[in-house]
Length: 401
Image (cartoon, rainbow, N blue to C red; front, side, top):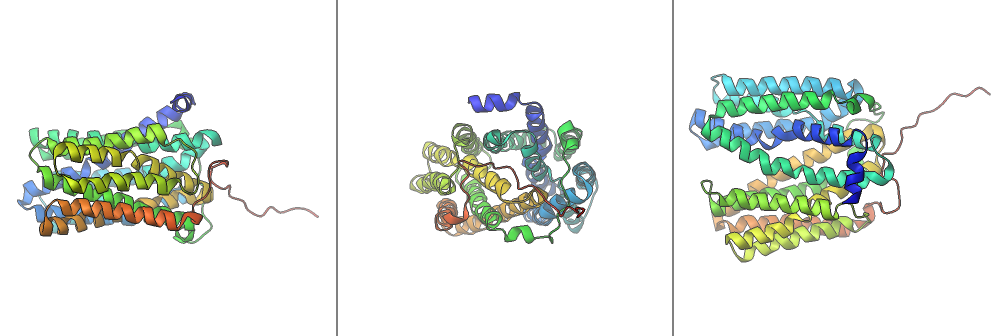
């Protein structure tokens, strides 16, 4: 823990972590709020699912695009514009009496304009700390983001069910604008300028490390999405058990990240950390009791934040600084695809074979991640004794002969 204490004493680090977590807090609330609001407006969960799908498609498309724009127009300009458009789209969804196609259109716009805060902050981190502190910083970031998934769904569910879905969406807009303004106006954001990438859009995905991080992101988040579907199918929507079990899953990730995420990362680090996730998720299939599922997911969670930390660190160490934001955008898009795939496969198996089908899905995604990490181990950089800061951008310098 001494590494984290030293890290938080570094000027600007605690502030930028708090600001970006606040700015990203709506990510844990928006889907649930839209689901509840559209179901209340239309009387159909199917209609609500279509609106959520439109928002997810928009977000998946936008990830690498808006992240790359930060190198063209500046971090603050892109974040300000996307925050304004996203807030306006959510206001329309909350307040306007639209037909289903209208809700889908504005849901798509809200997803398309989701501020790329995650890509921005992970691009800024290497400029805030020295090379020795960067690994624990990525680990701390991956761990603390679990607070979003622990607290945000609880907050928005209470507001939506006790006050109303319109106030819930208005709360999201307020946090989006307030948290976004805090992050955008942070001095650290203003001091960093991402160089304009000289390569064509999408070329960074051709780098083996970025492609591996994206594929593993699909599998890891796919496993988490399948778990969420399985827990809801097992314990139902109405009781506290589902929320408690999912909170235990996130607490395991938080604990794992803080305890083990800062350990030096060799080529086998990803495979080992994913193996912990796979073992925990595989154990869930043996019993559907509250305590067994909770214990199994606590074990599985221990590997999640450390695996994400490897993903962020290896990407940072392997691409030019001008390409880091776009690389993180692609990784984010991969995670969204994984969430959609995991939920869809788990849903089909729940319908055909009950809740165990979802846990088999989760275990399958996690085991696939272990296999990819193990068979492609040569594609993972050895970060144990090297600087994981992004590769500096260079350009020809004219000389006088």
